[in-house]
Length: 444
Image 1 (cartoon, rainbow, N blue to C red):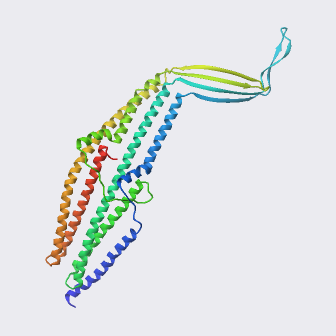
Image 2: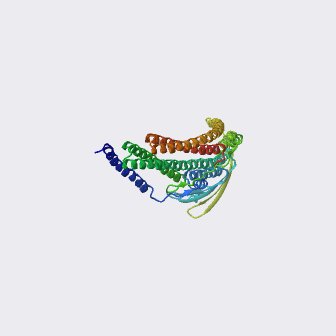
Image 3: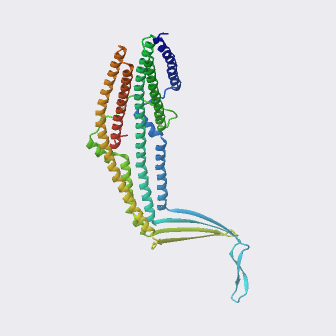
């Protein structure tokens, strides 16, 4: 058997096995992706749907309702309170006393308490001066306002999470496109090497190398598809949808704001800073209202009553009172309230200052990242273009017999790496613009 044929036979067998393996991979992917494609949605639609459906937003809205309920409970102490009471009493017998004349002789009996007694009364309490009720009412109103601005901050966090999930899907689509292109190139190279081997002018080692590269690229394709599936499911969960969602191809974040403008907007427009400022105002207001714990309470109480005896005689009566209560010593409770209020003010002020400092740092970092990402993206695209040209030249040289397919495989890997780097840089540029909009309070 000639030497060339002795080398060619194992190559043909290995090529056949490799072809069967590669053919089974697309069929498996087709079975995986054979279901109906997820519906596509724009970023604006995704944010709107998340704010309307996401459970976290619903919880924040319910927290506002809870704060409203607590406010009504606190205000109840400012309004009159009317209660009714009924009492039935059963004695072993009627209670009587003897009636005597001036000489001491018994001339009869008088009923003092019947055996069956039924009484009822209404008690009306009207707070005329209720400082602690004022304090609780003011505090509940502050908490309600804090819940409202806190709900806005929750909406901001959900919108940011949706945008990041959306961009993750965009990046996965780009990664899939890069790997699909690499697979096409690897398949073309493998087909060429296999054809040369079958024609008796190629080498088995070239076919094996090409097949190995094709299998490696296929692994990257499947990994990118798996990442796309996870990203789609994550977006579906954020939008409270029973299934994955896909995205459109375009994402436009508008014009990049000026650094000075963005720093000013971060102080005035960010929802989290507004929420912290509201909590600071509430804490300062509560600290200034501790005087209410030292004020007296004045309450008016009216109580009409009726008593029905065993003879069904109806007896009516009423009483009215003004009750003044002056707190003198409470074991240090009022001092504790004052210290707690002062500590809350210190905490709230520190949170505001720290968040403001962090927000301005995020604006500067995002702005710098945009500049670097844009320059890096330009260089990455140039590198990808040159790597693709190098692959074309290496392929031409290999087909002309000037080099081995090692140069082709190396150039293909470099081209894939360059395209992947460009895709990552594109995602970094989009993420940096989103970071700047979020840090400055422009998104959502």
